[in-house]
Image (cartoon, rainbow, N blue to C red; front, side):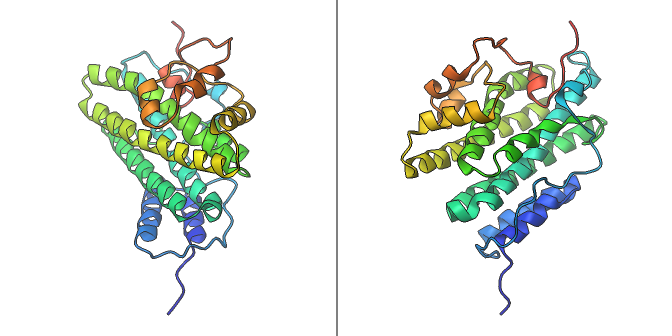
Length: 287
C-alpha cells in the first residue's frame, strides 16, 4: 500500500496555488483530506516564504492605494468589498502557513484548528467574490495593498509571535471594525452583504479564540505569563500600535482580556481608524 501524502506537501502546494478559484478548492481539499485521514502527519516540505499570487490585483504599498469613492457610491462600495475580499484571500494563506510551518511543533489539534480556519476563510472569500461580481466587479479589478503578508514573514521563525500578531491583533481588528461596517451595509439596503459580514464576524470570533487558546498554551508551556508575553511580542512586531475602537464584547467572547490590549494604544493615537482603511489600506477621500 502506497504511503499517504505528507501534510506539509499538501499545504505547501495549496499555498503556492495562484488563481483564486483554485486556491479556494485547494484550501478546502487540504482541510477535508486531513479530516478524513488522507494525509500523513509528516513535515518533509518547507513552507514557501511567500504564497502564490494571481496576476491581479496589483499590489501597492498602503500609502500608494487610490482614494476610495464617495461613501455610498458604486465606486466606494466596490472598493470596500474588494478590500475585504483581499483580506479574506490573504487570510487563506495565513491559516495554511500557520498549520504547515508550525504544525510539527504544536501537534495535530493545532493543525486541525488552522486548516478548518483556512477552509472557512476560503468560504468567506468565495461569498465576497460572488457579491463583487453581482456589483459588476471581480477580485483583481482594483489594486490591493501589499502589507498583509508582512506579519507572516516577520514572524516566520516564532510561533508565539505569529499567534500574537495574526489572530490576536489582525483578526481581532476585524472584530472591531466589522460591526459598524455591517450596520452601514445594512442601512444601504444590501441585505446579502450584511449577511456575509455577519457570517464573517461570527467565524472570526472563533478564529481569534483559536489563536488565544494556542498562544496561552504556548506561554504556559514556556513558563511565561501569557499577558506580558503577548504585550512584549506586539510591541516588538507590530510597530504601528493598536487603535481604537475596540469591540470589547467580541474580543471577550474570543478570550482576549480587555486589560491586555487597552494599555497598548499609543498616547499619540488619533483614535478611530477609518473602516475602509482598516479593511485593506484604502485611503479616505478628502472631506
